[in-house]
Length: 261
Image 1 (cartoon, rainbow, N blue to C red):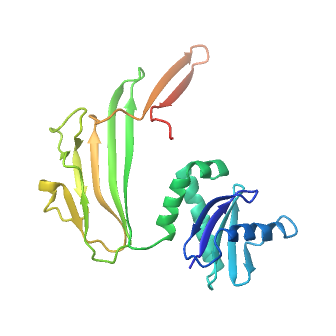
Image 2 (cartoon, rainbow, N blue to C red):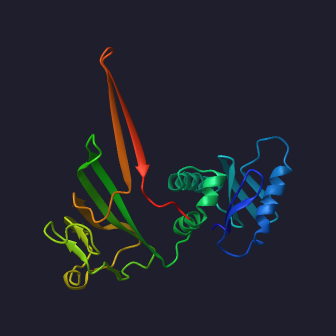
């Protein structure tokens, strides 16, 4: 079992610190690790180090040290694999893995750590949407498709009932609630076979008793009439050189999402 996980900059500054068991001396452990690391001869440090009854397993990625500590007899290869996958995951979610991106996404990193490394009586619900857009040469929209999923990851005991409430303005069908407004409309919807729909029509409640793990609770699709503007705009420009018969295409993508604060 992991006692602590922390991320240090190349200068030893703690960027992320997570204590899972409270038995390893607090944040001073990160400083102890960096002092031992700097006290080693040469540039190549061992990925596994020991101090008293504490084991440090670490990898270096993009100038950062990702470190896990434990006082138990755990396979170092398992922890190295975990750290490597965690580095990839953080890079995917933050855009890249570096001191700046970690500092700007601290809350997201802690949320990911809670989801990856902590398996208590918890439930995680994610809404994932894929947006496909066809844009004309003048910038107008020709076709818009949204495909979405509601994904559930449960660490509750198997058989525990979970109730998911959707907004009562949620409507299914092409003939309802077109255009902008408070309602949410989708064209098509499908549910996992374990979802009970006896309260869906009246109260928009989904009931299920899933086993531990992940499943896709609901899939939905929406075409053309979006309830809100697109989060981006695309400005195309096409130039044709008659002499060489060469086309040059320039695409300018503008994000209309508000900046993070």
